[in-house]
Image (cartoon, rainbow, N blue to C red):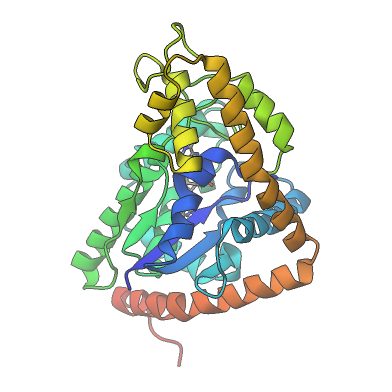
Length: 332
Ligand code: TYM
């Protein structure tokens, strides 16, 4: 079976619909066909300032949500990044074959450092994509299911794998981004030309999976739509309506064509009202299941410990091979 690795940051108390539709939904599906490793990337979550208690809570909440939406810990390895020390160890080696200019070209670093300025950004934020490459390469992943905003980071991990292999000898599988076009970028409900984002969007623009279903339905009903009244899929000229159709289609499995036909002659209000109900119905069981996992933290931690053990069984030999290739003397 081809191998999959992906990760998600525990930087908020809930994932949002963009995380789910852009990435996590595909993780769940790929469990049928791939050998899967999924990690809650807590090392990445400390690159821009954080509260330790919140991080601990959010790490568990993240794992609980992944289980609730259908990550099966029997099928896949579900683990916390910091439980597998090989991630940080390989990241160091990869940082030594990454060019300073190459790292400087990462657009997410440029965006995230723009607010406070580069001088105030941590070195960890700068080297973040190198740690991400280590996450991917440690598992010899063939495919990395992510949203569109992670494409450049996966490209970097490909470049680093190829560079390491050609410099030191065949060691790493060269991974490919797995991006499902239809839902690769879910947009902010209030600003439908920007992506839905935990850091950049206003609360009204984001559907948090764990927020009250009725409040989320209301956010859908208040979504910014476009001039005109026709319900057509036209991302260029009608980004608001098109985003709603994307979400609708992804949550129900109905194609965009089916939806636009069904809504012929109806108005934006009908679409938003009905999609609001779809979203609320979708979230209710996920919230219940998440809460059940959180109610038993000892069991949750046990599942994560098993996941970390599975992960180390692959990560440790990969790191050992890389250490050997670069010429580190093995401990006697
Ligand atoms: P993170 O935690 O920001 O987001 C998790 C996943 O959600 C996707 N995503 C979206 N997809 C569609 N529309 C949106 N509006 C949207 N917002 C977020 C992201 O593309 C991502 O797939 N650097 C990564 C975490 C990471 C990782 C890895 C991913 C660390 N190591 C190794 C893959 C492999 C990140 O910040 O994701």
